[in-house]
Amino acid sequence: MKFLHSMLRVRDLDRALHFFINQLGLIEIKRNEYPAGKFTLIFLATAQGEPEVELTYNWGMNEDYSVGRNFGHLAFAVDDIYATCEKLMKSGVVINRPPRDGYMAFVKSPDNHSIELLQKGAPMVIKSPWKEMGNIGSW
Image (tube, rainbow, N blue to C red):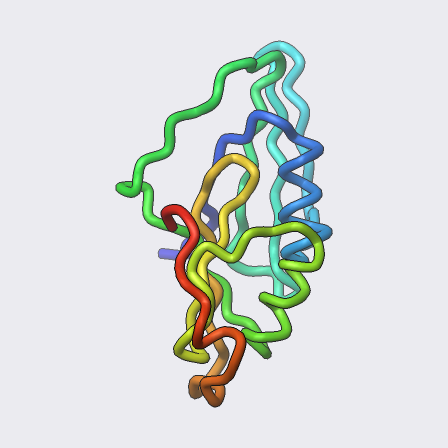
């Protein structure tokens, strides 16, 4: 068995793509339009290619999708947790759970999906301002 992808529904496709591609750094690898069903599927991946995130955009959707904590989260390993969080903050992303431990942080997509960022390998040395930062909202 091979894990293929996780699917997330998005309401504003441009905003979701800006977050996942421009801010988080994923790459669009495939896009399928389904005019009869009025939806678009966009598959994103890391530079390594696996696993994939499938964004499902239902055309004309005006209501927010409900997302509970029972969904869980998507998780990505990063080379430098502090640099990644700094870059995301500078691009307007709220760090909901800062990397106080030098290892783990959480942010949210524009559609309120939780994204976990994990330091590759051992945790980084704990340092300011991260160690003093509190949580913002839920994650």
